[in-house]
Amino acid sequence: MRSKIMQYVDLHTHTCASDGSDTPIELVKKAAALNLLAIAITDHDTLGGLDEAVAQSKISNIEVIRGCELSVHSECGELHILGLWIKNQASELEQALEMLREYRTERNRIMVHRLQKMGVNISYDYVTSLAGGDTIGRPHIAAALMQKGYVSSIREAFNNYLGSKGKAYEAKKVLSIDEAMHLLKISNASICLAHPGLVDCSEKWLDHLLLYLKGLGLSAIEAYHSSHTSATEAMCVRLAHKHDLDLSGGSDYHGLTKPEIHLGVGKGNLRITSHILQKLKQRRIQNGLSS
Ligand code: AMP
Ligand code: ZN
Ligand code: FE
Ligand code: FE
Image 1 (tube, rainbow, N blue to C red):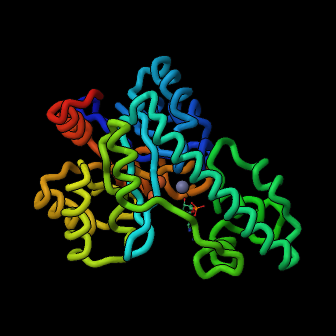
Image 2 (image 1 turned 180 degrees about the horizontal axis):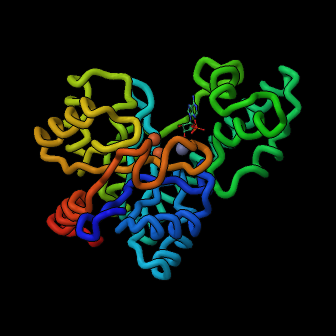
Protein backbone atom coordinates (compact mmCIF):
# COMPACT_ATOMS: atom_id res chain seq x y z
CA MET A 1 0.00 0.00 0.00
CA ARG A 2 1.34 3.42 -0.97
CA SER A 3 2.04 6.08 1.60
CA LYS A 4 -0.60 8.81 1.83
CA ILE A 5 2.08 11.45 2.12
CA MET A 6 4.13 10.58 -0.95
CA GLN A 7 2.08 11.12 -4.07
CA TYR A 8 2.93 9.97 -7.57
CA VAL A 9 2.25 11.11 -11.12
CA ASP A 10 2.64 9.67 -14.62
CA LEU A 11 3.40 12.31 -17.26
CA HIS A 12 3.49 10.12 -20.38
CA THR A 13 0.51 7.90 -21.28
CA HIS A 14 -1.39 6.83 -24.39
CA THR A 15 -5.04 6.07 -25.03
CA CYS A 16 -6.94 4.56 -27.96
CA ALA A 17 -7.02 8.07 -29.47
CA SER A 18 -3.62 6.88 -30.78
CA ASP A 19 -2.04 3.47 -30.21
CA GLY A 20 -2.96 2.76 -26.59
CA SER A 21 -5.80 0.35 -25.83
CA ASP A 22 -7.71 2.14 -23.01
CA THR A 23 -10.30 4.75 -23.83
CA PRO A 24 -9.46 8.16 -22.32
CA ILE A 25 -12.19 7.61 -19.71
CA GLU A 26 -10.87 4.15 -18.78
CA LEU A 27 -7.35 5.52 -18.44
CA VAL A 28 -8.41 8.35 -16.12
CA LYS A 29 -10.45 5.93 -13.97
CA LYS A 30 -7.48 3.53 -13.74
CA ALA A 31 -5.12 6.33 -12.74
CA ALA A 32 -7.54 7.52 -10.05
CA ALA A 33 -7.92 3.94 -8.78
CA LEU A 34 -4.12 3.81 -8.41
CA ASN A 35 -4.27 7.03 -6.34
CA LEU A 36 -2.09 8.90 -8.81
CA LEU A 37 -2.18 12.63 -8.21
CA ALA A 38 -1.98 13.49 -11.92
CA ILE A 39 -1.45 12.02 -15.36
CA ALA A 40 -0.53 13.62 -18.66
CA ILE A 41 -2.20 12.13 -21.72
CA THR A 42 0.31 12.33 -24.55
CA ASP A 43 -1.15 10.59 -27.58
CA HIS A 44 0.79 10.55 -30.84
CA ASP A 45 -0.31 13.23 -33.32
CA THR A 46 -3.73 13.90 -31.79
CA LEU A 47 -5.46 15.89 -29.05
CA GLY A 48 -8.59 13.81 -29.70
CA GLY A 49 -8.86 12.09 -26.32
CA LEU A 50 -8.18 15.10 -24.14
CA ASP A 51 -11.60 16.70 -23.68
CA GLU A 52 -13.21 13.41 -22.59
CA ALA A 53 -10.31 12.71 -20.25
CA VAL A 54 -10.47 16.17 -18.65
CA ALA A 55 -14.23 15.80 -18.15
CA GLN A 56 -13.67 12.42 -16.45
CA SER A 57 -10.86 13.86 -14.32
CA LYS A 58 -13.36 16.12 -12.57
CA ILE A 59 -15.55 13.13 -11.72
CA SER A 60 -12.59 10.94 -10.67
CA ASN A 61 -10.88 13.73 -8.71
CA ILE A 62 -7.51 13.49 -10.43
CA GLU A 63 -5.54 16.05 -12.43
CA VAL A 64 -5.25 15.43 -16.18
CA ILE A 65 -2.66 17.38 -18.13
CA ARG A 66 -3.43 17.99 -21.79
CA GLY A 67 -0.49 16.72 -23.81
CA CYS A 68 0.67 15.08 -27.01
CA GLU A 69 3.76 13.33 -28.39
CA LEU A 70 5.36 14.45 -31.64
CA SER A 71 7.99 12.60 -33.67
CA VAL A 72 10.74 14.65 -35.27
CA HIS A 73 13.63 13.94 -37.56
CA SER A 74 17.24 14.13 -36.36
CA GLU A 75 20.69 12.93 -37.47
CA CYS A 76 20.34 10.14 -34.93
CA GLY A 77 16.95 9.01 -36.18
CA GLU A 78 13.50 9.76 -34.80
CA LEU A 79 13.23 11.81 -31.61
CA HIS A 80 10.04 12.20 -29.58
CA ILE A 81 8.96 15.48 -28.05
CA LEU A 82 6.18 15.86 -25.51
CA GLY A 83 4.01 18.94 -25.17
CA LEU A 84 2.39 19.30 -21.74
CA TRP A 85 -0.42 21.75 -20.82
CA ILE A 86 -1.39 22.38 -24.42
CA LYS A 87 -3.86 25.25 -24.51
CA ASN A 88 -7.51 24.63 -25.33
CA GLN A 89 -7.81 26.20 -28.77
CA ALA A 90 -4.48 25.17 -30.32
CA SER A 91 -5.62 25.60 -33.91
CA GLU A 92 -2.21 25.74 -35.62
CA LEU A 93 -1.09 22.63 -33.79
CA GLU A 94 -4.39 20.90 -34.61
CA GLN A 95 -3.90 21.70 -38.30
CA ALA A 96 -0.37 20.29 -38.31
CA LEU A 97 -1.54 17.16 -36.48
CA GLU A 98 -4.24 16.63 -39.09
CA MET A 99 -1.60 16.80 -41.82
CA LEU A 100 0.58 14.30 -39.94
CA ARG A 101 -2.37 11.92 -39.65
CA GLU A 102 -2.96 12.23 -43.41
CA TYR A 103 0.69 11.30 -43.99
CA ARG A 104 0.15 8.34 -41.69
CA THR A 105 -2.83 7.18 -43.76
CA GLU A 106 -0.74 7.25 -46.95
CA ARG A 107 2.07 5.39 -45.20
CA ASN A 108 -0.22 2.81 -43.61
CA ARG A 109 -1.87 2.12 -46.97
CA ILE A 110 1.56 1.55 -48.54
CA MET A 111 2.49 -0.94 -45.79
CA VAL A 112 -0.84 -2.78 -46.05
CA HIS A 113 -0.47 -2.91 -49.84
CA ARG A 114 3.02 -4.44 -49.46
CA LEU A 115 1.61 -7.03 -47.07
CA GLN A 116 -1.18 -7.85 -49.53
CA LYS A 117 1.39 -8.40 -52.29
CA MET A 118 3.08 -10.91 -49.97
CA GLY A 119 -0.20 -12.82 -49.71
CA VAL A 120 -1.40 -11.35 -46.41
CA ASN A 121 -5.18 -11.04 -46.67
CA ILE A 122 -5.82 -7.89 -44.62
CA SER A 123 -7.68 -4.81 -45.83
CA TYR A 124 -6.93 -1.26 -44.73
CA ASP A 125 -10.53 -0.98 -43.54
CA TYR A 126 -9.89 -3.90 -41.21
CA VAL A 127 -6.84 -2.11 -39.76
CA THR A 128 -8.85 1.08 -39.15
CA SER A 129 -11.64 -0.95 -37.53
CA LEU A 130 -9.13 -1.93 -34.81
CA ALA A 131 -8.31 1.71 -34.00
CA GLY A 132 -10.27 3.65 -31.41
CA GLY A 133 -9.37 7.18 -32.47
CA ASP A 134 -7.75 9.52 -34.93
CA THR A 135 -4.15 8.31 -35.07
CA ILE A 136 -3.48 4.99 -36.77
CA GLY A 137 -0.02 3.46 -36.84
CA ARG A 138 2.05 0.32 -37.05
CA PRO A 139 0.71 -1.13 -33.76
CA HIS A 140 -2.76 -1.29 -35.37
CA ILE A 141 -1.36 -3.08 -38.44
CA ALA A 142 0.50 -5.42 -36.05
CA ALA A 143 -2.77 -6.10 -34.20
CA ALA A 144 -4.48 -6.89 -37.52
CA LEU A 145 -1.69 -9.37 -38.42
CA MET A 146 -2.11 -11.01 -35.03
CA GLN A 147 -5.92 -11.15 -35.13
CA LYS A 148 -5.80 -12.84 -38.53
CA GLY A 149 -3.19 -15.35 -37.35
CA TYR A 150 -0.29 -14.22 -39.55
CA VAL A 151 1.93 -13.68 -36.50
CA SER A 152 1.72 -14.88 -32.92
CA SER A 153 2.88 -11.65 -31.26
CA ILE A 154 3.23 -7.91 -31.84
CA ARG A 155 6.99 -8.40 -31.59
CA GLU A 156 6.90 -10.93 -34.44
CA ALA A 157 4.82 -8.50 -36.54
CA PHE A 158 7.49 -5.82 -36.08
CA ASN A 159 10.41 -8.22 -36.58
CA ASN A 160 9.05 -9.75 -39.78
CA TYR A 161 7.04 -6.97 -41.38
CA LEU A 162 6.75 -3.57 -39.71
CA GLY A 163 10.04 -2.80 -37.98
CA SER A 164 12.60 -0.65 -39.82
CA LYS A 165 14.12 -3.84 -41.28
CA GLY A 166 10.74 -5.48 -41.85
CA LYS A 167 9.50 -6.51 -45.32
CA ALA A 168 6.57 -4.07 -45.41
CA TYR A 169 8.24 -1.10 -43.67
CA GLU A 170 7.76 2.40 -44.97
CA ALA A 171 9.37 5.40 -43.21
CA LYS A 172 7.10 7.90 -41.45
CA LYS A 173 6.99 11.53 -42.58
CA VAL A 174 7.63 13.64 -39.49
CA LEU A 175 8.12 17.28 -38.56
CA SER A 176 11.49 18.99 -38.31
CA ILE A 177 12.71 19.82 -34.81
CA ASP A 178 12.10 23.53 -35.44
CA GLU A 179 8.55 22.98 -36.68
CA ALA A 180 7.58 20.80 -33.71
CA MET A 181 9.13 23.15 -31.16
CA HIS A 182 7.40 26.16 -32.73
CA LEU A 183 3.99 24.46 -32.81
CA LEU A 184 4.25 23.43 -29.15
CA LYS A 185 5.53 26.82 -28.08
CA ILE A 186 2.64 28.71 -29.68
CA SER A 187 0.30 26.23 -27.97
CA ASN A 188 1.64 27.42 -24.57
CA ALA A 189 2.98 23.93 -23.88
CA SER A 190 5.84 22.99 -21.63
CA ILE A 191 8.15 21.12 -23.97
CA CYS A 192 9.93 17.97 -22.86
CA LEU A 193 12.41 15.73 -24.69
CA ALA A 194 10.91 12.23 -24.36
CA HIS A 195 12.92 9.12 -23.43
CA PRO A 196 16.44 10.24 -24.49
CA GLY A 197 17.58 6.71 -23.64
CA LEU A 198 15.77 5.41 -26.72
CA VAL A 199 17.78 7.66 -29.03
CA ASP A 200 20.77 5.94 -30.58
CA CYS A 201 23.34 8.65 -29.82
CA SER A 202 26.22 9.64 -27.58
CA GLU A 203 25.93 11.84 -24.48
CA LYS A 204 27.95 14.46 -26.35
CA TRP A 205 25.41 14.54 -29.17
CA LEU A 206 22.55 14.82 -26.66
CA ASP A 207 24.40 17.64 -24.95
CA HIS A 208 24.55 19.59 -28.24
CA LEU A 209 20.93 18.75 -29.01
CA LEU A 210 19.78 20.05 -25.62
CA LEU A 211 21.62 23.32 -26.11
CA TYR A 212 19.78 23.74 -29.41
CA LEU A 213 16.39 22.67 -28.02
CA LYS A 214 16.76 24.94 -25.00
CA GLY A 215 17.16 27.86 -27.41
CA LEU A 216 13.83 26.85 -28.97
CA GLY A 217 11.99 26.72 -25.64
CA LEU A 218 12.65 23.25 -24.18
CA SER A 219 11.69 23.05 -20.47
CA ALA A 220 12.42 19.48 -19.42
CA ILE A 221 13.99 16.09 -20.07
CA GLU A 222 12.09 12.88 -19.44
CA ALA A 223 14.65 11.32 -17.12
CA TYR A 224 12.30 8.73 -15.65
CA HIS A 225 10.86 6.33 -18.25
CA SER A 226 10.05 2.61 -18.40
CA SER A 227 12.92 2.00 -20.83
CA HIS A 228 15.59 3.88 -18.86
CA THR A 229 18.34 2.25 -16.84
CA SER A 230 19.66 3.98 -13.73
CA ALA A 231 22.70 5.03 -15.81
CA THR A 232 20.40 6.70 -18.36
CA GLU A 233 18.49 8.44 -15.55
CA ALA A 234 21.77 9.69 -14.11
CA MET A 235 22.86 10.99 -17.53
CA CYS A 236 19.54 12.84 -17.91
CA VAL A 237 19.88 14.38 -14.45
CA ARG A 238 23.43 15.50 -15.31
CA LEU A 239 22.36 17.07 -18.60
CA ALA A 240 19.28 18.71 -17.06
CA HIS A 241 21.47 20.32 -14.44
CA LYS A 242 23.96 21.53 -17.05
CA HIS A 243 21.27 23.08 -19.28
CA ASP A 244 18.98 24.34 -16.50
CA LEU A 245 16.14 22.04 -17.52
CA ASP A 246 13.53 20.39 -15.30
CA LEU A 247 13.15 16.63 -15.04
CA SER A 248 10.01 14.84 -16.12
CA GLY A 249 8.88 11.25 -15.95
CA GLY A 250 6.28 8.90 -17.33
CA SER A 251 5.65 5.24 -17.94
CA ASP A 252 4.67 5.55 -21.64
CA TYR A 253 1.72 3.33 -20.76
CA HIS A 254 -0.10 1.94 -23.84
CA GLY A 255 -2.43 -0.61 -22.15
CA LEU A 256 -2.56 -3.95 -24.00
CA THR A 257 -0.45 -2.59 -26.89
CA LYS A 258 2.57 -2.78 -24.54
CA PRO A 259 1.39 -5.12 -21.79
CA GLU A 260 4.73 -5.14 -19.98
CA ILE A 261 4.35 -1.43 -19.14
CA HIS A 262 2.02 -0.56 -16.28
CA LEU A 263 0.40 2.77 -15.51
CA GLY A 264 2.35 4.78 -12.93
CA VAL A 265 5.03 2.14 -12.34
CA GLY A 266 6.30 1.17 -15.81
CA LYS A 267 7.98 -2.23 -15.63
CA GLY A 268 7.40 -2.26 -11.86
CA ASN A 269 9.81 0.08 -10.15
CA LEU A 270 9.21 3.46 -11.78
CA ARG A 271 8.00 6.13 -9.33
CA ILE A 272 7.54 9.77 -10.35
CA THR A 273 6.92 11.97 -7.35
CA SER A 274 4.60 14.97 -7.26
CA HIS A 275 7.72 17.10 -6.71
CA ILE A 276 8.56 16.63 -10.40
CA LEU A 277 5.14 18.02 -11.33
CA GLN A 278 5.50 20.94 -8.92
CA LYS A 279 8.82 21.95 -10.50
CA LEU A 280 7.33 21.86 -13.99
CA LYS A 281 4.46 24.05 -12.78
CA GLN A 282 6.82 26.49 -11.07
CA ARG A 283 8.69 27.00 -14.34
CA ARG A 284 5.41 27.65 -16.12
CA ILE A 285 4.55 30.34 -13.60
CA GLN A 286 8.02 31.90 -14.05
CA ASN A 287 7.42 31.89 -17.83
CA GLY A 288 4.00 33.51 -17.47
CA LEU A 289 2.11 30.36 -18.52
CA SER A 290 -0.94 28.93 -16.80
CA SER A 291 -1.26 25.35 -15.64
P1 AMP B 1 4.34 4.41 -35.83
O1 AMP B 1 4.16 5.74 -35.16
O2 AMP B 1 3.17 4.03 -36.66
O3 AMP B 1 5.65 4.31 -36.57
O4 AMP B 1 4.41 3.33 -34.67
C1 AMP B 1 5.23 3.54 -33.57
C2 AMP B 1 4.76 2.68 -32.43
O5 AMP B 1 5.18 1.33 -32.67
C3 AMP B 1 5.37 3.11 -31.09
O6 AMP B 1 4.39 3.01 -30.04
C4 AMP B 1 6.44 2.07 -30.88
O7 AMP B 1 6.74 1.84 -29.54
C5 AMP B 1 5.85 0.82 -31.52
N1 AMP B 1 6.93 -0.07 -31.91
C6 AMP B 1 8.00 0.22 -32.65
N2 AMP B 1 8.81 -0.87 -32.78
C7 AMP B 1 8.21 -1.88 -32.08
C8 AMP B 1 8.53 -3.25 -31.80
N3 AMP B 1 9.64 -3.81 -32.29
N4 AMP B 1 7.68 -3.96 -31.04
C9 AMP B 1 6.54 -3.39 -30.54
N5 AMP B 1 6.19 -2.10 -30.77
C10 AMP B 1 7.01 -1.35 -31.51
ZN1 ZN C 1 2.76 4.68 -29.05
FE1 FE D 1 7.82 7.90 -27.72
FE1 FE E 1 4.90 7.58 -25.95
